[in-house]
Length: 288
Ligand code: ATP
Image (cartoon, rainbow, N blue to C red; front, side, top):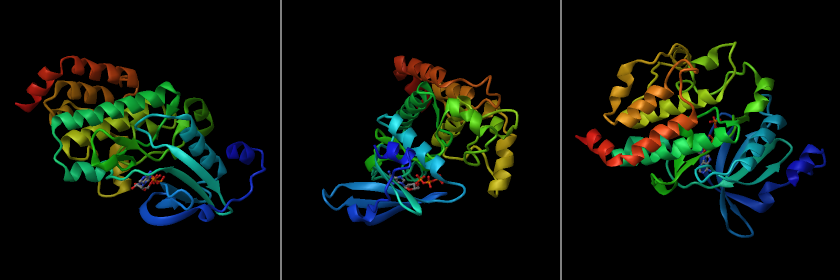
């Protein structure tokens, strides 16, 4: 494979634009721009993330992102199609998701409880898959979640730029990463490394936002936000954003500041499954 050739130092630079033409602009992230591209020979449309080689993102990071995408396969995870390596850029070609990001989607759509629960179910299934495969996603936030054709049932997680295998973590000890407003408090502590439980916290913040329509952490700028994030403490008022007792229980377990008191992905799924076994009761309590 190209990846193996690349690792062996035998890779030839390729010219992605011989094969693909840019037909639209999709978005921008910290390191890359994402374009809508069309394959010149078969007309297929893909999303192409172009990343400029730089000190913050070099070969090691690219290989990590590609390998994570190759190893992880889940219906709610965007699929890798191809990748290209050029002199100054890396390109990741992936499944094109036509639809809104979670951030815009929940703003413009008045989702009912049933729809929100469908979203939670997909998120919990995803995080449980990552963790059972030994991967930590490290960047759960609304900007990294899209909905195909704006359908609640078709959630897709994008951007595996920070995804790491648990046993690789020792090489990246004390690396502060994530997004202000979504990071678990322990991530700021020098004595603690990033862990599966830190993903659970970030996802708890996302679920809070889904049910309340508000940010859990508030700050004027990212510096202040980071401080709020770092000093976050759970309190019982947080779960009052919903009457649904299962969601309350989930938030209570997921948003504990102490990672040892926080539930893991399996426990989160179990709480959720219990709701499904008496879902009628849950839904009626929450809508009265
Ligand atoms: P970050 O700053 O979060 O690390 P990044 O540079 O890794 O970002 P992405 O988050 O992957 O970039 O993508 C940036 C934007 O491009 C997304 O918010 C989304 O709007 C759009 N985008 C990314 N992947 C796709 C896709 N597969 N289909 C459609 N749009 C996409």
